[in-house]
Amino acid sequence: MLELDKIIMPFYLKHFDELTDDKKDIFIRLLASTDLQLFSWFFNRAKSQDVELQMMVEYIQKVQKIIIN
Image 1: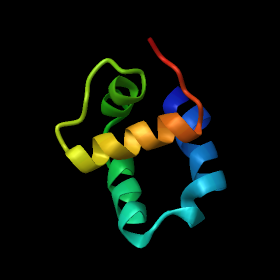
Image 2: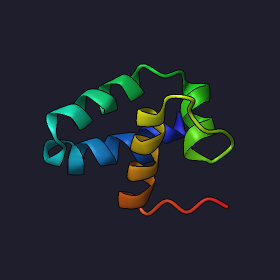
Image 3: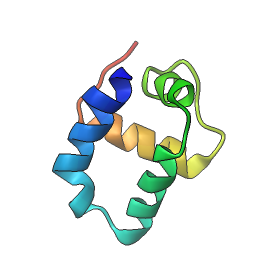
């Protein structure tokens, strides 16, 4: 899906090594989410009920300069 190709993979390649170990664990948990969940979160259709996952989504949106209204 688009979110993996255009958002998650570029983030992983550019920023994963900079994350703390705790944030790396959260990122890995994020990858276990369904495509529909990821799409909903990254395109601001819904928020994750998991606060850590939502914070990671928002961080990725920020560093990848993703602006969705």
